[in-house]
Each structure stands twice: as structure tokens, then as C-alpha cells.
Length: 217
Image 1 (cartoon, one colour):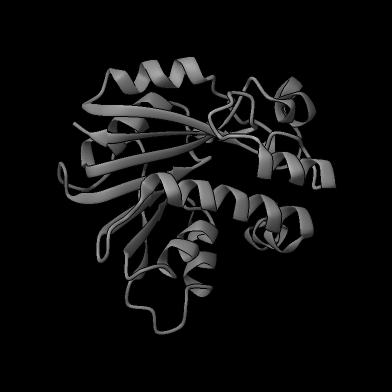
Image 2 (cartoon, rainbow, N blue to C red):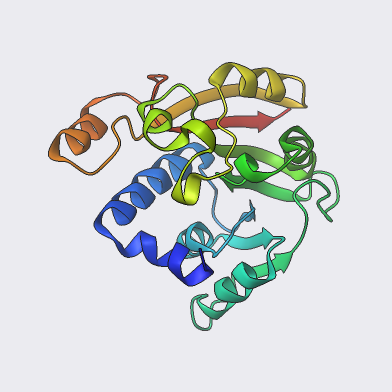
């Protein structure tokens, strides 16, 4: 899948709904303050990075190791935006000093990193105040539809996390007040799926999008 094809998925009815649903949950849990710095680890084509950069004056950097996706992200950055930038980098060895970024977010990127625990440790190391990581939930209907037998489409090769293992991994790091939430309880964009998203609380454990949030200890 090319970067353009990947990013164009967010313009489809399902992609737009999924992306906005995920972004609302991520933004609520990250809760960036005015003029804070945000690092988006594994930003890919920059869809979520652009959304954060369009917010309340946050200074956002998208980081990825894929030159083609970074080139797409740079080409589609907001015109004349001074608070949106992109850099090449490895999630497992972030080139930032300890506690140098106010808030660090990662959206489904660790699912494709060989040593995701190392990457999570790096995220916690460079964060000053807040960490939010979006993952694919192994205990979900989405996994049954898209994740079994190696996955399909954009999910091919992805690692699907459980809430228990991500909680244990975060508890071993200098993080506090760990909070787990989920969204996208039913695959698809049917009226029932949309109704479930509006009515069901994010604390339920079986949404396809698993988000782990924590404060820097």
C-alpha cells in the first residue's frame, strides 16, 4: 500500500469515522496544554500529526522511519504552519534528551515495531508530562475480523496487544496513573456500530482500538 493509498483511506466513510473516533479519544486522554510540545512517534503519513497540529497552538513533530511516508507527510503539512514538522527516526532509539517533550503520542505504530517494549521505554524516557499510546486490541471483534492468521489489508503483520500486557509493560517504566480505554466496539460503520460508540463507555475492554495513557512519574 502506497502512502497516498493509505492516507486516502481516511477520506472514505469508514476511514473518516474511524480516524475521528480514534483522534477524539487520543486528544481527550493526552489533554495537551497550550503551547506544549507533542511528539507523534511512528507518524506515518501524518494524518494524526496534522490533526494535532491544527489544535490549540501545540508544537507537533511527527517522527517516522519510512522516507516515503515522511515525504508524503511533509508534502501534505498545513501550509505556512510553524507548529508542524517531520523528522526521520527510529522509535526504538529516539534522538531526544530525557524528559524533553511535554507529551508523546503513538497511534498503532508500536504494533509494527519488532521490539515494541524498547520503543515504549523510549517514549516514556523522552516524555516530560504525559504519554498516550494507541494499539490494536487482541480481545476485540476487530481482531476476529481483521487480525487472525497474520491479518489482512493494512493490518497484515500487525501485533495485537492485550490490555494486561500493556499495563504490565507500562508499570515497569517511570509512569504513573496508568489508564486503559478502548473505542471502535463493532467493526464497520453501520448505524449499530455508531450507536455503540456513542453509548458505550470507553472503559469497556473489548473495543478494537486500545489506548494506554499515563503520567510521567
